[in-house]
Length: 200
Image (cartoon, rainbow, N blue to C red; front, top):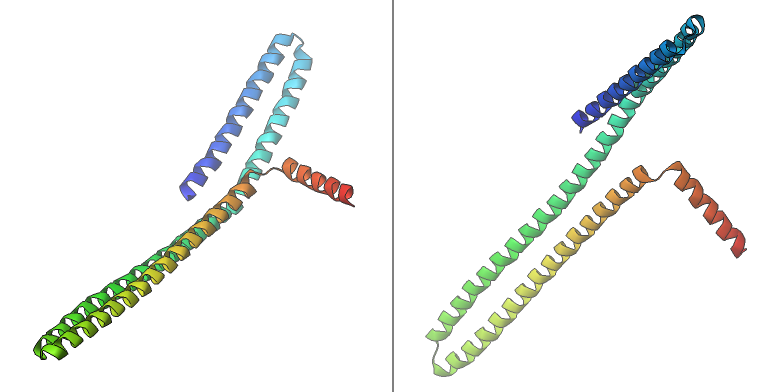
């Protein structure tokens, strides 16, 4: 970002120098083609002073505006990095919770297998009853674990969507701030005042 900014300031200075040189050459051509030796010298001198004033003014503006521009762009970049880091942390947290629920699901499968093994050791009547109970418990545990996992996954998705929406709004606001001109602002204020007058 800083390299681009330095390139932009250097490009502005180069453009100003080019424009100044063109103006000097145009003034020299004008002075040479006029045929009035004394008047053209005065005109050329005046023209050169104006070009020098322009170059100094443009150079001073470039020097004064470069630092605030760099600072503003640096702050914007830091904000975007912070927002992306927050989104990344939220994603990692969601992935950790998903992994935890998957582990719980694996544990529930092991518990189910243990319950079924115990049920096989019981006699026939107890066996049938225990198997049915084990299956019901297994279904309940699976269902609850899956529901918890689904809720956490959905919550993490909502958080990620909300974070992405906040980032998009922030970037859109920043872009609008950069693209809206003073004329647009004045026009919007005028329109709002006219609307308020027509409503009252």
